[in-house]
Amino acid sequence: MTLCPIALAVGCEKCAMFKICPLKTVIGDQKKLKGFAPSIKIDEKAMKKFLTPEVKPLFDKLVAGLMGMDEPLDHDAVEALFKQTVEEAGLKLGKLAQPVRVALTGKTASPGIFDVVLLLGKQKTVERLRSAVHIISTFKE
Image (tube, rainbow, N blue to C red; front, side):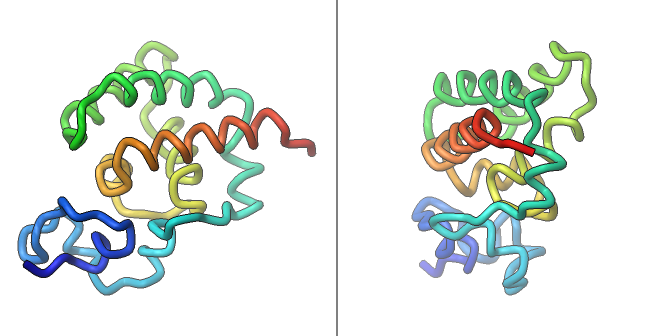
């Protein structure tokens, strides 16, 4: 079985084979794969714009929800968690998805946010969200 470059980049051994990979549209696009490295560097401009105190409680809810999920994560369950989180906060999905994208990939552009979560897996997603919460807590203008 051959794993796609994205699966290799994130250390995923449970990803689908290349021909059925949910992210086959980005296969070979190295710029889009950078956020899947074992560690990331968050773009400073993106950090200032999207990792704000307002998203901290939303990240906390996502972490709690993800911790209650079994692995492998399910796309529909992840999507439902995001939708419930924004509905409870009275926000649109983009107000959560973009900060999460920055927290998970360090960039403002990536594959779909639910696919990013699935590819990173529960542990790495939670680690990066918690790291972002720490950054938000200590960030000074």
